[in-house]
Image (cartoon, rainbow, N blue to C red; front, side):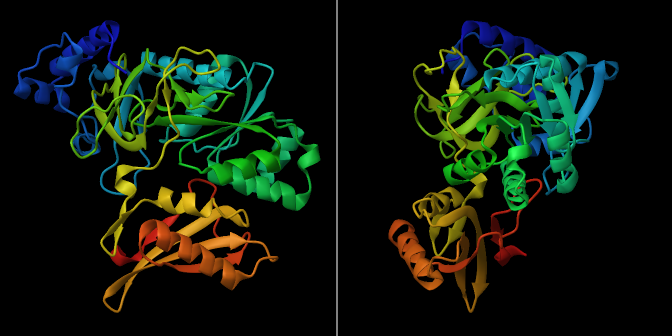
Length: 411
């Protein structure tokens, strides 16, 4: 998507604010001799910003307005290094709620729905974002937060919750518990708004079937408001994003050059109206593509494809670059397997080993299943993993995000 003149004007406003605040990015612009931009070509010359820039600004170096205008901070949930602290003005908070309300509306949620929120509250952007958007829409919120599955199911039944907001991992855990307890006929759920981690088609189908609900994929990240900058529609043909609030480009992560619509690469986001901590050309490391053409739903908002992984997800083993998505796609070809898997990489006797744990039911020959999966991985990726087949339910479930790749070489 070529940046429009209107978006260029908004970027210039953010450039002036960043330079005035003497932020890390304002200094980058001064070093590059850039005071403003006039064309799409000028925009492509703007420097990128990275997570490391944001960490270096800890605690409040990203603040681009006077402190008395900041009403809230949020923090990324990263587990390595210093956290990233993002300041929000009242306008930022209001804009985020507006975007999130759009997401709910796109998913067909109305003010007659009861929205059960299982995402985390606190410094993280998830829970409070889901709540503010639902309240903006006028829906009744049930702000449960994560965990306490017993209580979740009780409230789901007693409050007649019609919309579930969750990570895909927790939605699956709830679906399995509901099936185990035989309470599906006591529920009123009709939609699921799912975000915060990549999830494959098999997992999607299981959650949708077992809960009997329509699923919608929501996108966002703490550095850019939080979840709610885009969502899939009922046609499930990509994620519509709000291009009056964010400009998205796709770049080649190696050459850093912009890619045309339709090609897969790394998502780079520019906030167009954010005040507390505006970001220009922020490298997300998420992999997707901009889907060309119009969506059958008729919305004019542009679309991203489903998130295909992260550039930093890549595992190097036996000289081969492997992405978890490649393994997931192979496993999806076996209808006997559940959606859950785990990859463990270890170094033993001078060589790297990949073990893949998969789940299936008791009607399958486990040894034959392991052999077939290993052969398929070998033919597709180039080396033979050790495959361990276990019964459904034995792999860990999570109330937040599921850790699917464990690299024991660096532990």
